[in-house]
Image 1 (spheres, rainbow, N blue to C red):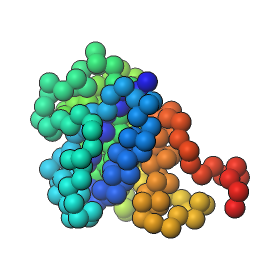
Image 2 (cartoon, one colour):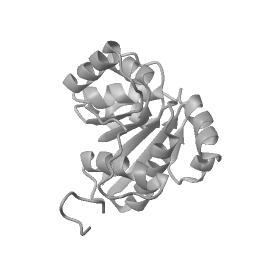
Image 3 (cartoon, rainbow, N blue to C red):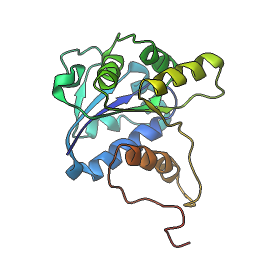
Image 4 (cartoon, rainbow, N blue to C red):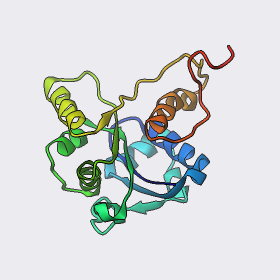
Length: 188
């Protein structure tokens, strides 16, 4: 049973967060806790990009971005995986430099110091050298950079299916058992 943190950042890509929450609901038998924190921009972008506030309908534990009393603000709570999805370069930079000024960056700092799994679903393009160096620093610290770059082997037909090619990959990286397209294992 996994204890998971989902930090939804304010960059474009709310569809990735939505599909991640949907899939975490579908694999709820594999989790004992799912804590969610959203930035103000994440809430705005969800409404702007998806046209709704359906994030309010998920049966996960939601925490305010400044709630340092959230269980995953401490390593003693033993959350084992954190997704930052989508992850802006600003959030990535703050995590890479150890600036814990909100619950997202504090939780990421805790995950790294406890040597647990931090998966950052970056959504920026193009990249400058500061971004690349921050990604290098986080990789060296144990983080996993998984850009929101969809694949098309499975021939996705909807935007949700396109986003799922990324989300299934990050769930794989976190050790979840998911039913997904596997190269040369699925019938064409």
